[in-house]
Amino acid sequence: MDQWFLLTIAWVAVLAVSLTLGSVASYLRLLMRRLTPVGARKVFGSSEGGRIRPDRERVGVSISALHGAAMHLFAVGLTGLLIVRRPEHVWSDIGTALLIVLVAVAIADQLIPFLLVVRHDEPEVILDHWMPTLRRAVLWALPLTFPVLISRTIARLLEPAEPEPEPPSPQENLQELIAAGEQEGLIEKGEGELM
Image 1 (tube, rainbow, N blue to C red):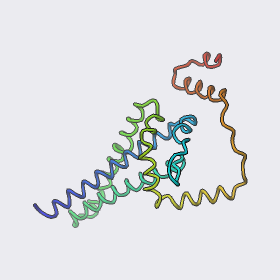
Image 2 (image 1 turned 90 degrees about the horizontal axis):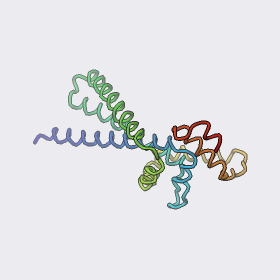
Image 3 (image 1 turned 60 degrees about the vertical axis):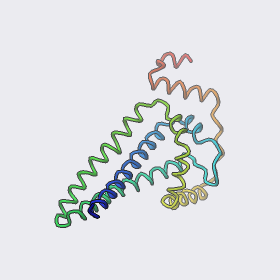
């Protein structure tokens, strides 16, 4: 077999993996956006883990960083592949790469994750299942997120100390559940006020 053919196959495989990783990261980000405060405490409230605790903010920043890295790798890798294969048509290759990236982002980064998120009612259960991967994602993304996390820590240190927020009372938890039930259409407005 031709050496260029094998290199092209390997290159396309790396592009497919980076697009898949970007799609999974987009799915997880959408799930995290759907978390309620009660669900976030359930998923991220446990203190298990190593030195670096995967709290909601750290996981969100890490997933966003890995998503950006995967999608940039896909875009740059695709453009590079087209330019290497047809160096005499650089502008045409850049235009083709742009079109393919836009279609790939629309399908793999927006449509598929959104359709998967819409099918699930309980993002807490799914994120709890993904928690080992999210813990690893925090570590993998640490070189990318370190400056952001350090600057956030310094900003918190420079802010005046705020009193610790009290945990929500059972009545507040019940009101939140009623509001979520009304939002989902499980409870009618009048019934929620009676409860």
